[in-house]
Length: 400
Image: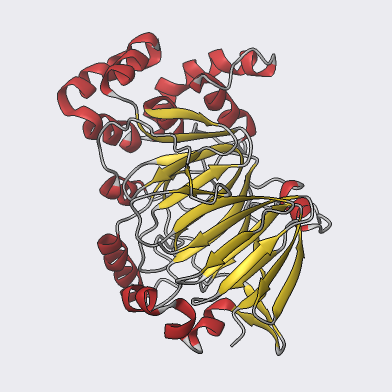
């Protein structure tokens, strides 16, 4: 049985995407739309295409034809389908302030919206499926994001040093993270404008003169306003820029985000691997559907001390694996050099994307030649070898 196939992902043209990174990676011409995400998975919204001798077959349909064998018995028994979604992201403009639900809450929310008759494609739909969405990202260069609430002493300092926020200190003292965040997110827009407008008016001239540093929330607050469509009111998401940890992640470093951790990607490119879900609850900094009550219902209101993951080199010295608590997925980077092939044995489905170089993949009678930007699928039970004549960098998604 053939166990190695070429795979073609699907581009998502969300407004925040860039116009050059993903087309350049894939070797295609840009049509001046934003290229935000490149999906390599079996999610019903945009399944990747398996390149077979019979033609291109959507990955979800392909796996269903022999799920237990293709996925491997352990993965099939636990999940019943491909449990992860693999992506490349190009964040040109900020993503929304967001949180992902737990598995139990996703099942409840999905059922509730189905019973209400909200179409899956409706713009006001929160739950696109019944799954949780823990996720891990590895930076492909300098990458900026917001990740969880600041530690208590740091948040007190933010409230104290910004005169516009001083009156909020009493609320934080009395009611903690939940009371503070609920207060600012539920403020009528006229009232939140009274707090944010003096701050923004002070920052915009400095932003225009390039006098703000990316390591300061001031930069991102000003950028959010400068890049937003003209509106009568300021976006309440600006509070989150000051209340969350602002992280700069360097190439090859990773961050894991579990259910309940509020976050937002700000700028850069990354590889992202998550549970097979498209559930996002949004609270601001986006033209997409915002549902503050639903967002507040799912946030874990506690400080986050960010952990930047460096990954660990496996025994072969070629594969760097980024471990996480998620049972759905495992992400690794493979650095290949001439005369040092990578030998793999798959226990479940594996999906690869080639980020640099050219490679040959061999498995029994099958041989695939791939270049930068191309992807391939390996089914469970394969023993295979990947080699290059120079240098190549790949990312692999699988189930641990």
